[in-house]
Image (cartoon, rainbow, N blue to C red; front, top):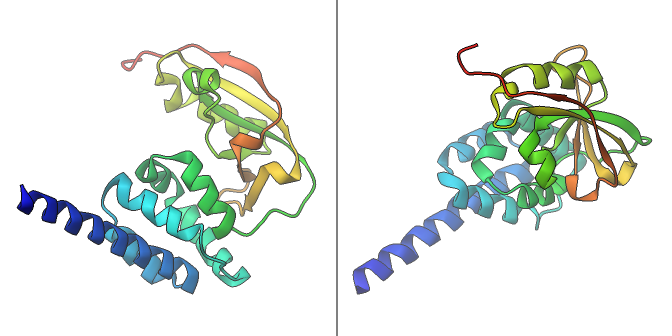
Length: 195
């Protein structure tokens, strides 16, 4: 029993060490070190601890721009790894360059289940056609189908504007907890996997 307790303590210590290494790399603005330390994080507990450590940092504007590049490349996988949107949003508020523009009409496709629970994702687009293409793509295989959403986001609801990876993307990262009103523009039935 004593050996098991020691192993658990050692595992927790290792998780905290890996998380702190990631947060340190994020604050230093070293993209290569950030990528290396991200590979060391194993599982959602490491990632959650890393995001928590990042919320305690005060990165410079340069570091925030560097992290935005990291987010552009790895954002989807980071969200899956962290497994906790609220912890991730808190960290992104510190790590991404803050949005300083006017309110925006934004669109997103999401699963009908996420709409019902109001657990929308963080990436929204100023282009309805971009959101609609996701709704009609592989997301359509989500249980219950997908919905196309719209919100008139206030500046305090938008965390960051992401430079376009593709010419028409117009992506914004939002804090879903602050969204005042989200409406359904269209619903798309679930598609068969074999279709």
